[in-house]
Figure 1 (cartoon, protein in one colour):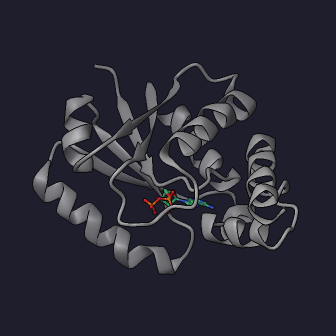
Figure 2 (spheres, helix red, strand yellow):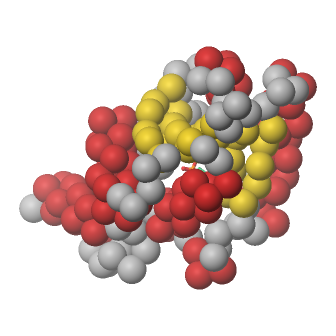
Length: 167
Ligand code: ADP
């Protein structure tokens, strides 16, 4: 049986931390689907189309050596989507203790709803543990170069976004 994993998120925008988790997942599973959650409770900076486009471009830029990674988007409950895709695992990244409480609740609820789908937590390389999309948006908003933390396509897109906004 093909072992399919879903890596869901808001990806506003995708960062090197996300990509680290995606690469690790691609070593553990036959197929990894990076899945943009459309109905996230968050109000994203980037539109759905922009985030999806950046995920695709980032995968080409950073993961083109891996043939078992693809991107998609979903609406509704993650667990329904995971079932529909025939996934056996949901991958989440754990950076610090602060992620734990929320992730723990989600994982247990998802297990209750779909016992056949296992949530797998992966830790990124320690250089990414302090990295999150909110910080990236904040830095870019203030005109700082974020190219150390995100793929080039993302850094360029953010630069353009904020240039357009302020000039
Ligand atoms: P969500 O809105 O679901 O939190 P995110 O796009 O913020 O979506 O993150 C998706 C997943 O990636 C989450 O499991 C999150 O913990 C993880 N993640 C985000 N940033 C990093 C990082 N720097 N290192 C490892 N995992 C990360």
